[in-house]
Image (cartoon, rainbow, N blue to C red; front, top):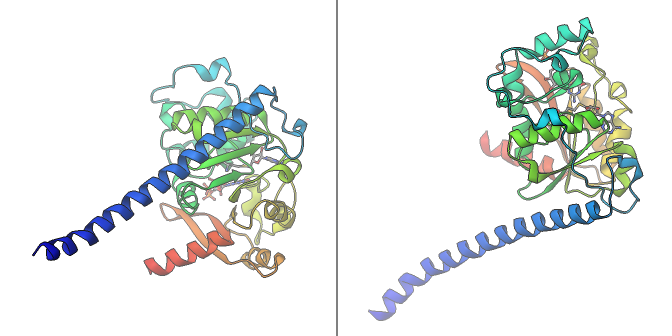
Amino acid sequence: MANASATAKSPRRRRRRARAATFLATTCHRLLRFLATRRLRLRLRRRGHGLDGDSYPSGHLPLTRASSTPQEAEAPDAAAAQPRQEERHGDDDAAATEAGKYWVQRHSLFSLYDRGVRMDAEGWYSATPESIAAAQAARAPPGSLVLDAFAGVGGNSIQGCYVVAVEIDPRKVELAAHNARIYGVEDMIEFVVGDFFHLAPSLKADLVFLSPPWGGPSYSQAQVYSLDMLKPRDGYTIFQAAQEISPNVIIFLPRNVDISQVEQLSWLSSPPLDFASEENYIEHRFKGITAYFGGVAQEALKQEQISS
Ligand code: MGP
Ligand code: SAH
């Protein structure tokens, strides 16, 4: 009798112990990563690095937090009714017209828009809509460090991963840092002002996310969008810079991109990387294509099989 009850209890105990061990391991991993990022940040702050990414010594991960402007320190606007002047792109009529079109989509770009999300002209037409950014971020392995190489106003960086966010325009970094505070994820992101191509050799990450400029809203006029049309360099150069950092790469591309060219990027590695792609829609409107390479593509393919 005593024996029977002992054997009945032990599998349960074993399961409980296994669950506790998994919980401890995950928590420790997260804590260690958090502490490592924090230590790095403090060390670099103490060394007095400024906001110019180009001035960082190579071999060091340049991590700085963007300072907020007095304007950004203001309380978030509740239910903003009209675009502010900076969002309407000053007196550039063509740009203001574009902002108008994207203004209507503001809540699909940032669901917390009314809490005071800030944008600039390029941010309006480039920010990844929130549900698409969330789906892309969900592909990152839990606890991984993501490099957002073209961070813009933060549409992707704010998705709750550990992120190093690189952006060449200091004003955009201020906006992105402000937006991160609205989403309560400012402690998970290190913002770096700098040129991704200059910084790439000194950056480390588990996964690189690329959402480079597509050349403005006129991208959609091309019948077929070629990777050569990406900015500030062609898609091959951008992809190769990312590959130096990690074999796991996600790229957000125009809906009219030549998908066979995109797939060929996986052949730049030997052996070729795994590749997967998905079309991204918002309310049945085709917005863009996300391409996955390396381990993150394997995961995407597995999840696809599970759901189909
Ligand atoms: P869009 O095609 O300009 O807008 O951009 P919309 O409303 O889909 O156009 P319409 O033709 O249906 O009227 C769609 C999405 O693509 C934007 O929300 C951005 O996420 C993304 N996007 C657009 N541009 C021009 C860029 C860009 O230059 N860079 C990046 N990374 N994303 C862009
Ligand atoms: N995913 C972003 C949008 C990115 S748009 C979002 O959701 O908000 C592309 C961004 O790349 C622009 O903000 C542009 O300023 C930036 N950029 C252009 N060249 C760059 C470079 N060499 N290094 C880093 N950022 C660059």
